[in-house]
Image (cartoon, rainbow, N blue to C red; front, side, top):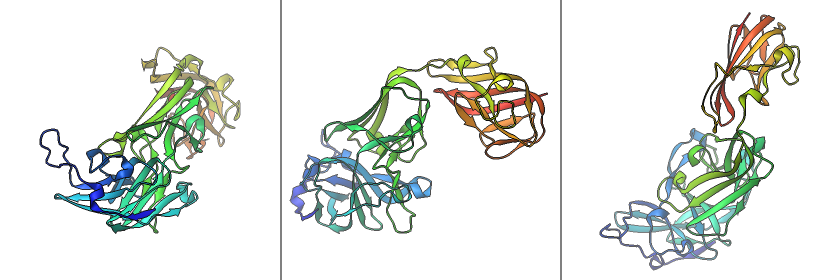
Length: 373
């Protein structure tokens, strides 16, 4: 995985910025024959990575780049500063952390940095290259994207990759039987992260969340009768998120609020832990609801319950379209309750209830229940 290298192999482009010539800023670049271009290119510049172990704050001194590499050809990390170039590579050794502590579960390569050294990979494809400048470690990780969370499956499902291409690649996955409303993330290597140090204080994300930012929150997913999710990578300058975009194609499901099953389930209501029924089943209140975007199911939904009996000392949860919402998720007024998971009834009796739900892409984003006797 390592070879001696001459500086001439990585002849730089002009950096003056005059005319059509490219401006090369100070920083770290992935360079060499394996990248299919000569010299330094602005879109080969590495970006500062987020530290998953520190609330995804910027990991100063840790740089990353997703880039396609050809097999059996030299590449290196070039440090460009004030017109001077210094090549950095490593004697790469195969590693596998076998998914420990939510890390990736695939082979990758790691080595101590050495100036004037080049590296190679045995298989062409997209790679996540990470350079920890403080510890002097280089990581070269093969990338096969997949999804986690679609239809409630938080395991890892591999996507189908397009042909290897230095400028752009796509990964797709089809759900012919439908996609449920929910949230998900893209991840590679059947894991969430890669730990760079022994102490576990430095971890780089191997997932893409909201707005394609590594380690960001989950991506909201509207329901589809059938759909195809596509993740596209393109070689781009700047933060990692600028290299990725996603789209969903298919027949979107538009839910009718009046037909959704809403109400209460628990040993503290008459229907028990079964689906809402009878007095524990809510009725849609169209007059008080306000839908601002029907196609994307955005707005406020209101449901009413009349004369439901609640048993003191017992528990329940709010139900919405198959979802379960407990004490930590529901804002309750008008009834004395406790608990952090199931909602414990402190004062029983017969209650009316008004359930208000902030709706977005078919999902309940907040739930409020106002009880009255």
